[in-house]
Image 1 (cartoon, rainbow, N blue to C red):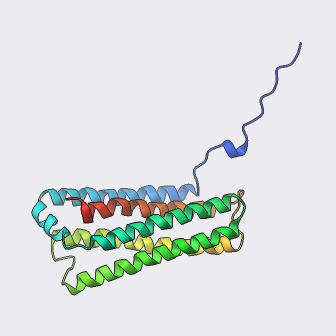
Image 2: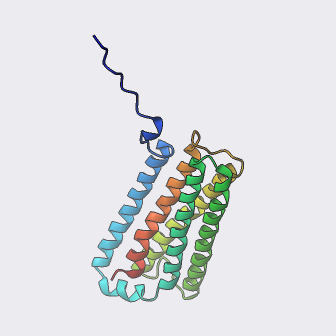
Image 3: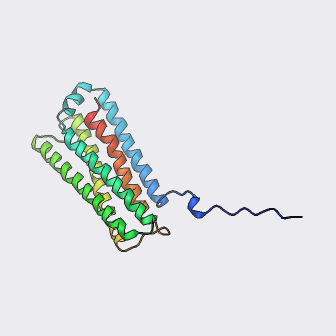
Length: 198
């Protein structure tokens, strides 16, 4: 009696996995939860004082916010390209893309520092108003995440430059990429919420 054919196991490449360390995803979800609480609290405070929030929101520099949005979106694209090169076994070719992402992050920091300097010169502080308290707290909390993300990008760039990443060693670059995309995602919620939505 003929034996039944044995089905070959699915190739390893077809098996889906969570990119990066599980620990980074726990951290990301915890951070998103913190930001979510901030956003809900902001929405509640705004609903109780719409006129004040609208008036002070108009004094924000939307152009700076839009420029920073473009910078972070561009940086995320560059990180994606770096991960693709690493996955293709071309780790060293990923390095310039990560350097570009770092430059975009640096541009974000410079724009934000100019914005903060302008606000401080105008007398804006955490105690100026409820809106300014949220504006400074939320944007500075995100700003510190950008700084940490840039440190991570430097580590990723160094690893790529030394040929550390490849199809069998994607953990480091995927972990860093996941964090950087989280930073980008939070800004995509923060910018319209604070600067645009009325």
